[in-house]
Amino acid sequence: MTAEPTADLIDGKAVAADLRARIGEAVAGIAREAGAAPALAVVLVGEDPASQVYVRNKGVAAKKAGMRSIEHRLPAETGEDEVAALVRALNDDPAVDGILVQLPLPAHVDAARIINEIDPAKDVDGLTETNAGRLMLGKRGLVPCTPQGSVMLAGTARESLSGLHAVVLGRSILVGKPLAMLLLAENCTVTMAHSRTRDLAAVCREADILCAAVGVPRLVQGDWIKPGATVIDVGINRVEEGGAARLVGDVDFEAARARAGAITPVPGGVGPMTIACLLRNTAVAAAHRRGLAAPEI
Ligand code: GUN
Image (cartoon, rainbow, N blue to C red; front, side, top):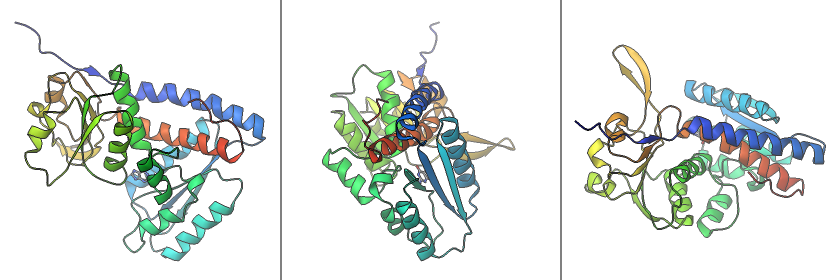
């Protein structure tokens, strides 16, 4: 009997650790040349438990990379104008290089308005209209972190992405849309699929690179995977199983692993890359704001 083929694991933790080490060196160089370490300001409104964990992790990672971390925690009932005023104050603070407003914001706050208040030069999430537009136009700018990390991981599994058919499952502003733009910039043929796509399984089976970013636990079945495909699972879903909570992706990992050529695990795949890319964007923004050469990271 021949053994079941199993895909290579794409180790996001290791790739992110390597990236963070290079960012640490770049940050030290910026601090030396500019006389102050890059600073990342994170704004959290409310007490969403997952957001609290993310914000804490971002602060710890920034400090580990040699940056200054500034946290603003506002109560859930904070008014939209007050949040906007804080963002403007951070825009005007010369000591702040990067600003991230953690999403989701409470329902009474217009997230699009708040994000757009961020100075595009400090928009380390890459979500302002200016940076989203620059990505669309193929111009340099700050690029959303999770899509950036996803493309880096796909790049570790393939010599080149050029000419490959990439299917992006999900059309969010945070992941799906910018990810499609980045893959296009790598010369992929890109298909965007979503909840209204007819015969999602058939579309996915065409993918050389399959990126799932829909937030539905194990939506993607093993037989949706083209043999040898590279699978990038962006989903991080908390499920209760056998009385215990665990994290699973948007892909049925074990089944997909038997068909894919390479696959990211959850956790330990795309997740660690998101924070590493946030640090990367902060270092890039700091260098740019201080008139230094863009760091090679
Ligand atoms: N919430 C979940 N992911 C993200 C992200 O990448 N950026 C922000 N600002 N909020 C998030």
